[in-house]
Length: 74
Image (cartoon, rainbow, N blue to C red; front, side):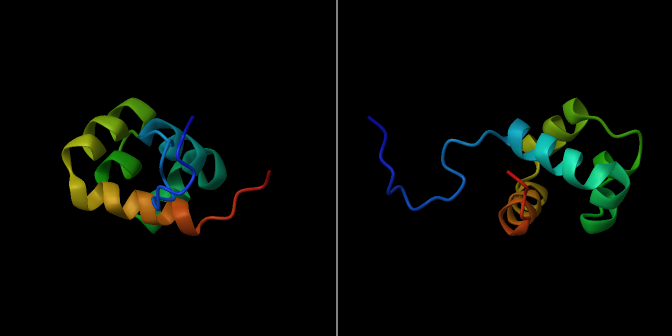
C-alpha cells in the first residue's frame, strides 16, 4: 500500500517520465526556450537530457518546476 499523503507532488514520477512528457508537450525548441540548458538546445535527446539532469541539481529543479506548472491534457 502506498502513502498518498507523501507531500511530494512528484512522488512516484520518474525523471524520464517528466522529460518525456515535457518534450511531447512543448517540443525541444520550446522546451529549450523555457529552460536554457544545452541538452535541450544542442542535439537534444531524452538520453542526453537525463544524463545531464541527474548530475545537475539546479537544472533538474527547473525541469521539475516546469513539469509541476504545466497543465497536461488527460
